[in-house]
Length: 268
Image (cartoon, rainbow, N blue to C red; front, side, top):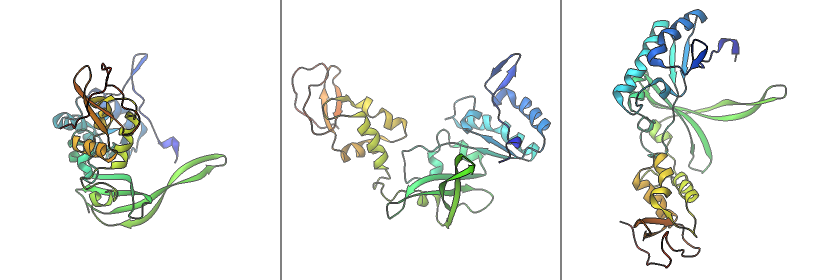
């Protein structure tokens, strides 16, 4: 890339201080800077949630935050690209519904492209860029690609995208992992997170053991499926009378605040 044609917004100068860029108040300054640069054709917001000064999970606030950027791009005849991530929970569902934050992020966009790494039917990893939504053309299909390591300049190694064959189908079908469970759960990811929180020789409060999974977007049903897959042992009691989890095997330690064993139970 010609880096002399790439500009980064690091913040807004206020006197001798620099504060974070705020789309709700700094759009005029941004427009003036763009006019000074001239011929700007692409504006990238990464992550796009930074364009929202309010709650990024509320539709009205997201639309209010994005509209000034949409108006700016329209005025200068530039493309506006927002980058975000998908929640891990809900694997197998519509990717547009898995965008972190309000659904307004995808509702406002004319085109939504989803990039993800999935497993093919033979178990090999592959990467796919698929159309999840398009108001100006086809809204399905995509391309396979992979990241190749190359020597960009003498002594400088870097990655680049090498495109593969075109693929047909909806983004939901293309990005569904064949190894996922019947409920759409990516068991490998959920199990990995849960195993990292538990041991066989120590009880962990269920609310703490499942916190990382819920933060990653897994539903209660998906968390429960992952716990059954690795045969989590459950017991109720302890100082707070709540549920505690541990991995199977190992010793049978006392619950926090208890000196003796109590019968294991089944959590509802």
